[in-house]
Image (cartoon, rainbow, N blue to C red; front, side):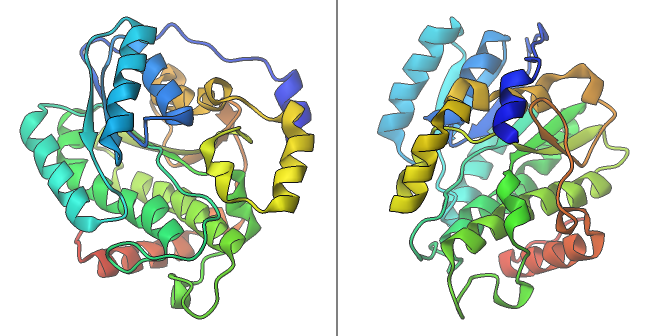
Length: 298
């Protein structure tokens, strides 16, 4: 069905400009993050690409400048698998940047073998959710001062494959890479929902989205049968530029200015799973996240 919708959907486009605005994109050195950076740079924004591998990031910055014609593109080191790196990044960003108009929580890992972050989180929930939760928390005062501002978090339709195991959030009792990925993407949807509630009246809005089934490096951990299926499904998948469109839509579409907390796909509002609309679960996840990260949101 998704493939058919992709074929028949009307493509979205907008001439919206971002001159004088600052955009931060995590995981922007490849895939949809890099394509998002190119598009937003073309719109005149200052684009800051937050990446773990600085060699690849610097090469990507050159590509983005060349493709967009915008010289105001830089990279900064950020490892979302390490709380110390996130805190150092946020401190440098808050000191060096007078504003942050659009935060795009794009970086992610998908269905990787079991591993833990430097802080002891299971890798997928650690990077995809906890890393972005902490980063957003540390940058929020600057984002609020830049209002109207937006926080866009890249989730996935995979959020509907599973729920969240609050009693074993780090999959220590048992690990299923598909369920752990789904849990982390559901956490993205619930985080956005909670964030929207807490940001009411501040001029800061939040969105989560499914980019589509996109041909990216995230596929590298998939097993043989999954790779085979995706090869067959390739005509119905998106390239990175197509996959970036819903992120860009959530970042710039003027009609979303008064909307917040929603989930989007194919540049339009979409329905998420029942778990993704569960405010009790969202609150429990929020409290657990604050406790495990030792942070307090006002």
